Length: 435
Image (cartoon, rainbow, N blue to C red; front, side, top):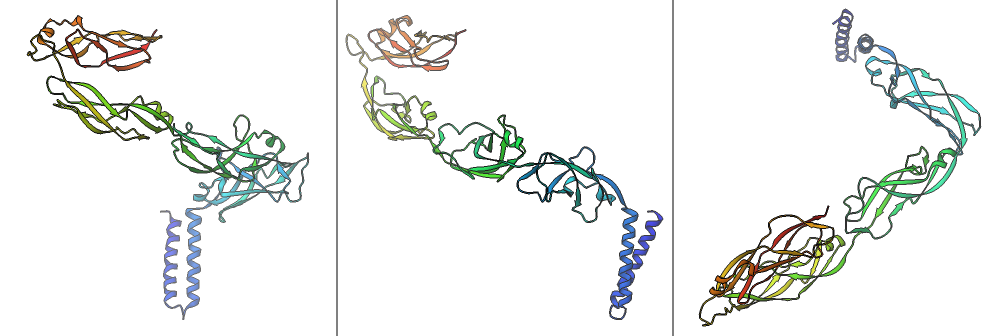
């Protein structure tokens, strides 16, 4: 601590003691109390001047946005062509002057009584600090060129500009035009700037919108290239209300049952009867396009040797309404008759792995190379199965109507007389665009 500062602080301590003594005897020694307070404040000002002196500086510093000039007391039918900016040389406390920015000052030019003219006027700028402890010494420049022109006005209908994403999600649409308030705004400014304005817009993001919504945002005047224009709008914001509806369509799809379990030995599924066989689906277009058939929940027929009838639930589909939601399924079960001469030999089962043949390959596609086999469960008399060769069974797969991608297909199987096909496995095929 330097000597001056130490002396000042000692004086402040003395002043504080005097102030306390004066306060205790305020009634009898009011003069002494007032004197003590005066001494205390005087000492505080001395400390400020020693440790935090007043200095001069330029605000704002180089590289920062300067103070924008405001034009006041102008008539309604004139406007200034170009904006002007100034800096100031000020006096303030050392710790305060480094904190000052353009926003701490207001620069104004008085246009009282001035009219539009071809003459460029050189008018003085008055700058006022928001902090009363800051003193403006000089305005740089002290005057600015001012060209006044007659204001031009044009009215525009507010438009909605889609930003930050795509349109509404699939399956949704605006069921009526948006309601914009205000619907029209007035653009004011110099003739050349107003002539450049092509539209007035409010930016709206539609991403993820699946219900009615409202947006309040800033209005922006833009030219034909979408660049913002520096003009005055009669209102700076607008509110837009949107009404969103889900697009619902109806289609019919066939029902596909799913059977699990194995019938009793010597029995097979002769038929599967469905009531109803068709399900109506109400959904958006994108959901409907993804459906090929309606799948039922699995139905267990383990060990059955007679017909099985059950009410089975339709498997739900997201964002879709299914009618009806249940289907009556009857699995017709019949014994397998093996063609033996004596009629007393029981049926036997066998499994064959067969290489399928492929037909009707769509134009422009190729079948990915690989080893393709399909499992076929067979039943018949022991002698017929013993004489069976793999080449006696044909399995064919039609590729008609398929697109590029991987598909799970069930071959059509033909077995020799006396052999019954119990089940046929699926074969996975991949189709690609032909080179």
